[in-house]
Length: 211
Image 1 (cartoon, one colour):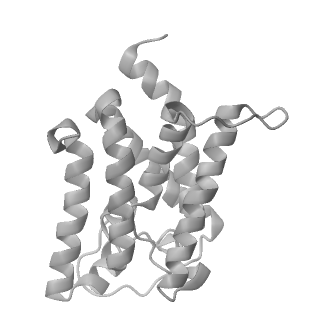
Image 2 (spheres, one colour):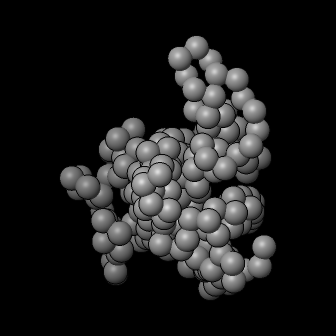
């Protein structure tokens, strides 16, 4: 598939890479994470914030989705984003993909907030948005055969297995980087994935009509 076949996903991945390189070169990476990362405690808590401009709290779920903590984190997310996202954008279209990415980012931030509203640790990365893409891919486009488990339909079982694998890989990356469980925003992955599950069929109906 050519980049022009999936301009939104390709452009998003490129923006993440370029921003990471620029921040690394200029030495502003930590400053950007503090000012543009999603910090749950900024809502309803007294925080000592650094002087200067801060991204408005309501926009930090989006701004944080362009920031990454290291090369390994960035490369892994970009690979998954391009592999899954470019296969989805062609049939779904750029508008539906934009809705899915934004919803995944905000759902991931909401889930992370609900898990620890007082946390002052910035959450960064495209994982919430990517988790939404993975959910749609697993629920609709994956052709692997997965047996149903009791009352749980086969397509939901397939989606849940893929979610577990995705979170497990993120945990391994966290340990490889020396951060342990604290370095991975598990609930952001869960929130983004749930957003994808809920939006998959409505987005298909929006794209192709009610059928």
